[in-house]
Amino acid sequence: MSGMIYQQEATGLSSPRRHVDRMRINGGKALSGRIELKGAKNLVTKAMVASLLGDGVSVLRDVPDISDVEVVSGLLELHGVSITAGTEPGEMILDPSRVELAHMAEINAYAGDSRIPILFCGPLLHRLGEAFIPDLGGCRIGSRPIDFHLDALRNFGARVEKLPEGIRMTAPERLHGAKIELKYPSVGTTEQVLLTAVRAEGTTELKGAAIEPEIMDLIAILQKMGAIISVDTDRVIRIEGVDRLSGYSHRALFDRNEAASWAAAALATEGDIFVGGALQKDMTTFLNVYRKVGGAFDIADDGIRFYHPGHALKSVVIETDVHPGFMTDWQQPLVVALTRAEGISIVHETVYENRFGFTDALVKMGAQIQLYRECLGGHPCRFGQRNFQHSAVISGPTELHGADVVVPDLRGGFSHFVAALAAEGTSNISNVGIISRGYEHFIGKLDQLGADFDVTA
Ligand code: EPU
Figure 1 (tube, protein in one colour):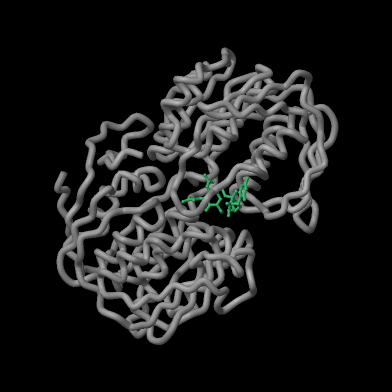
Figure 2: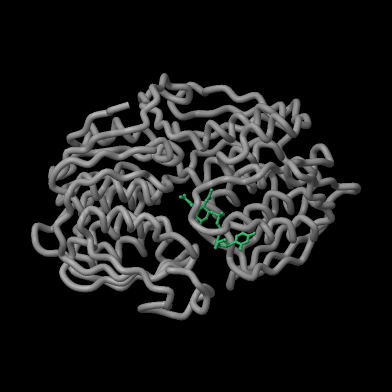
C-alpha cells in the first residue's frame, strides 16, 4: 500500500493528482459547510466487476475518484475491458466485448492493494473457464480469510489450486447452481455467490446471506442485466441462472460510510456539516445512535445536516453488527466523539476481531480508552472466548491534544483526522495515502469545511 494520498481535483474520473504523504493539522476548529457524496466504494467496485458478466456495454454513474476504483479499473483493463469516462462527472463506461486472460505476474503487480480480485473469479470462470487470484490486501483489521469464498466457488464446480504466487481456478465444465449456507453473513461471499450464480446452470440457494444496502444495489444491477434473483425472509437469496446477461445502466447508491464519517467529524469538532446525497433510509441505525449520543440532524430531500447540539454529549453502548445493525465501518470516527461525551461508553466490535488498533493514537492524544478481550455491553460474539481485544471502554469527557500519528487503515485513519481536527494544538499525520482508498477529494473537502491544515510532503 502506497503511503501517498492523491490530492485530487473534482474534475471527473481521471483528475490530475498530486501525491501527499504527510499533513499537519492545527486543531480546535469546528468543521462547517457542505460536502457532496458520490457512489459507495463498497458497491461501485463490485458493480465494475459485474460488467464482466454482460454481453454489452455497462454505464455506471456517480463513480468516486478513489484509489480502490483505480485498482479495479486497472485489473479490468488487464482483462481486456475498455474503460472510458462518460459525459457527466463520475460516469464510467465499461466495454467487456474483448475479455481475455491476464498474466499472473501482471495481476500480481496489483496484489496487496485491494480485496476485489477475488470477486473476478465467478465472472472469469463463466467467460474464460479460468481465473487467478493474487495475495489479497485490503485494510489490516483482522485475519480476513477467504475460506467462505473458496468453499462457495468449489460448490459451483470450480477447481481450486493453490500455487506459490496465488490461487488458480478452473471450470472444466459450465458452473452449476449450488446450495450454500454461510457460517457468518459475509458481505464479500454473498457478492461472490451472486456474481457466480447469475450465469450458472440451474438454481442457487444461499442461506445466511448478508443483506447490506450495497448488496441490494448489486442485485438491482444484476436484475437490470437480466438476472433472476429473489431475496426471501431470514437471509435466504435464490438465484435462477440464465444463459446470458446484457450490460447495465445504473447510478450507484450513495456512500453511507462516508456520510457517517463526516457526521462524526461534525460532532467531534462541535461543527455543522451538510452531507449532500445522504439518505435517511439506509442510515436509520446510525441516526438512532447519533441521536442517543446527543448529536443533532435535519433530514432534507437532498442530504442530511449533522451538527453538534451545543450542549454536553451523552455516553452510549454500541455493538457493531451486520446490516441492519450498526456497521463496523461507523465506529472509528464516532469513538472520537465519544471521548467528548460525559460518562462511560462501550463499543463491542463483533464483525472484525482486530479493529481497535486505531485507539492507540487516540490515547496518545489524551483519550481514555481501554480495550478488553471480553464481549462487553451486548451479546456474546464469536470472538469472545478468544484472545482478541474487541471491546472498547471510553471514559469521557476528555480534552484531546495534538500528537504525531500514523494512519493504520482507512476508517481508523479517518478517525485520526477527526481527533486531530478536534484536538487543541498541532498534529502531524503520516501515511495518509490510505485515506484515498475510500474518501473522494478528502483534502478538498477538509478545505471546504474550513479545516486548518498544511500538506507537508
Ligand atoms: N470472513 C471469513 N471468511 C471469509 C470471508 C469473511 O471468516 O471467507 C469473516 C471476516 O474475517 C470478517 C467477517 O467474515 O470477520 C465479515 O467479513 P465480510 O466478508 O463481510 O467483509 P468484506 O466483504 O471483506 C466488506 C467491506 C468492508 C466492511 C465489511 C463488513 C468491501 C470492499 N469491504 O468487507 O469495508 O467492513 O464488508 O460490512 O466491500 C471499509 O470500507 O473500510 C471496509 C473494510
